[in-house]
Length: 83
Image (cartoon, rainbow, N blue to C red; front, top):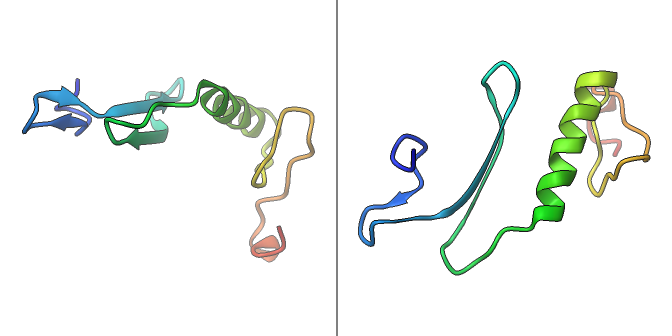
């Protein structure tokens, strides 16, 4: 898997700290790759999943620092740069 997703450090033989969020259709919706000395943040990974699920249900995007319960935003082109 590490080779397939491109997260294997060939020099050390260890994987980078990577997280892939894959939707029900098998498409990668998010990928985060940290260097080996930097750990992942499970709270942020859960927030990303919740944001993707929110978008799937509502069709709305989520602004920076969005959290469940916050309003979404329209993803129409006329709104680009407003948030």
